[in-house]
Length: 318
Image (cartoon, rainbow, N blue to C red; front, side, top):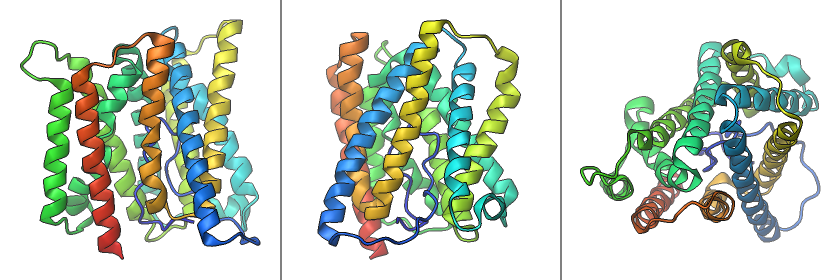
């Protein structure tokens, strides 16, 4: 299981990136074998998250994104309730939080981030959206000081600055090709970073099972209040896409939880970046998106800077 202070993995459209509820200990294989299996599960999760984004874009092009996210969150909330009910104390324990307002804020922030990402998929495509979104671990590092009072050394500040240079390479401001829509994934990354920091904050008082429950339920309630007014029945073929979206969401979270059982989040986070690779492949094959050289170069700079900040955080924690 990951420690509660770990940063959420790179999973832009995950319905939850908080630490999953604890699982009773079982007979386990050696640590090295567990870590290898956990890495494989993380890579598989990244692929499923990428497929989830494909379904989101397909549905987002034909329906209001708020409707797509609402139905998806209903399925996720059902998954959360079913999973948490099996844990010690069940739903009654999961609902008991010492920071209810912060937990609700986390859930609302995450659902808002998912909503912005679906809109970005439709307007920008998968490749460019994820290329910009990869900046979120750098935003976590930059905001950990003012939000949580953590010390950020000059090495990480340098990596953060380099990462933002990568974002400028992607966006190309002043070149005439930058679009205002390009700021959507940047806004989503900022919101996701705040969500991650709030997750660390509540972990000081609430166990991960409680945070997991409130993430799904608060998000489902919030998006329903907003999205129910845009309700419409999906076409029969689109219910198949929606089923695929919900199935991917549930499967990816189950695999993510299993991976967390076997290895520390800090060991798995670098492999979560493989989602960017899968998204790029699917974006080109399914939607005929173009891998512009500046996007590839900028994304590489941001990912390398993000990996460095993760490494420095791990070294500092050790």
